[in-house]
Image (cartoon, rainbow, N blue to C red; front, side):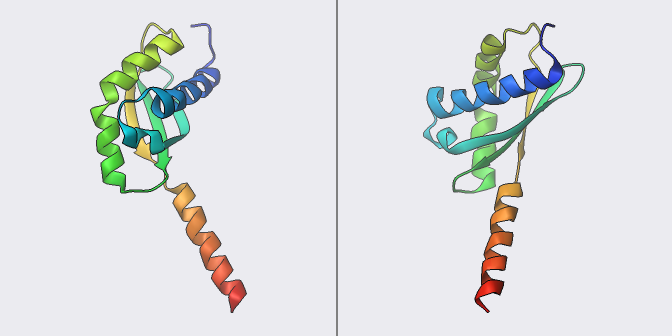
Length: 111
């Protein structure tokens, strides 16, 4: 494999973001933000960490699972790798946590 694992993860993050935001037929997937991609050393699994603008986690998890085959095959073509890892979607709630902390700090400053 010509690409290092870190470079492959970075490329996968960029390409998956483009696929979701521009190529996806499901309008809901255009609201998904890929925050990180981690690939196992043996290229068996690709954990895709995501967040979204608004909505429920369960809905986005279902939309991503329903589109998994399409996303995997489209991403494989863009990455040009022989073995495409299995995609695992993980909700990244760090953005929401950060927003809650900001809100709490603002409330403290008001008092």
